[in-house]
Length: 375
Image (tube, rainbow, N blue to C red; front, side):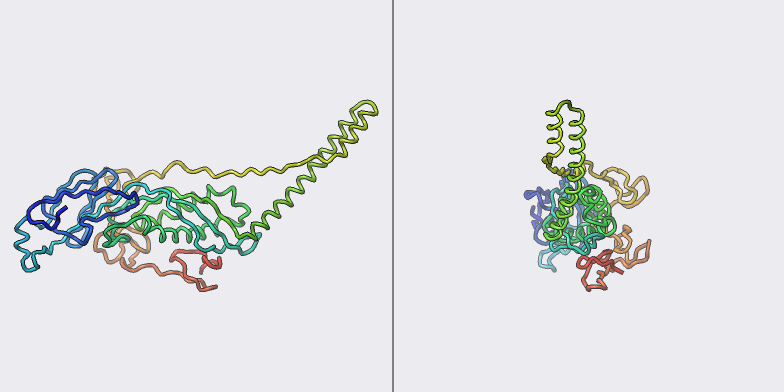
């Protein structure tokens, strides 16, 4: 790349060799003296963000772009003598990978508490996968990436997993009264949980494309209790079926003619039919339809790739930061939110359970440790 050379201009481009990088910075180590006229090539699945003098100044869509900085070949080096031949006009380009990252894992590291209406307080484990996409590159870099040269899915997966588990616990507490009703509601749970998480992900410039629940499992002793209850239900059904079969056999025997037919009918009536109980489990269908991609973060209408403002609602498309309280998109260098007056830099405080004292996310409604509803 040669960002510290004397004469030649830079040609900046990036290819993701690992398939797991969300963001990559050029130069990879620190910042550089990117010159006036340097060429930036952005692929269809990428976005380029130019940081100049420590601030994000421009976002670029697919294509070839000419960068404009204060670094002029040769002249800048001469003017940089007081700084040891290193220009103070530092610049770097971040490439954001806009593809959909699939098959990211989420699950409960420790069982979460759930108050079941029939089984009492139990602890559940849940596992699944989700698909992730960067939808607001500047906001994502400013809020999560910071000054890191590379940022992969591994570095964000653990935090997002904690958010998903917390929202899962809240959603279960509000919508499910007993885990005995779970098998028929996996699709409903997946869709509802994904909708609830959209706001959490959008605060960081991310989009949750799909979320799937693979399994929700109680402890072994609770599973044994469920199995015992199922067996009792089967025995009741077998008793009814046996009575029906006996009645049918007796009716058939009564219609038969002769002593032999009557004896056979009596024998059939006394026989106990062999019964087999078959349970059919249905796997929830995977939702194939991805949420409609909307370029405008405010009105969700589709706009052109190089638009800086939405031509439907006039909202600024490139989001630099959001309000931690209400999620309003803020203008660069804003100190307070124009919607709720909340301080832009103030972060939401975690919530502590009054029952067991455990720490939970700021917007959690139920405690992950004891299942109590947070005040």
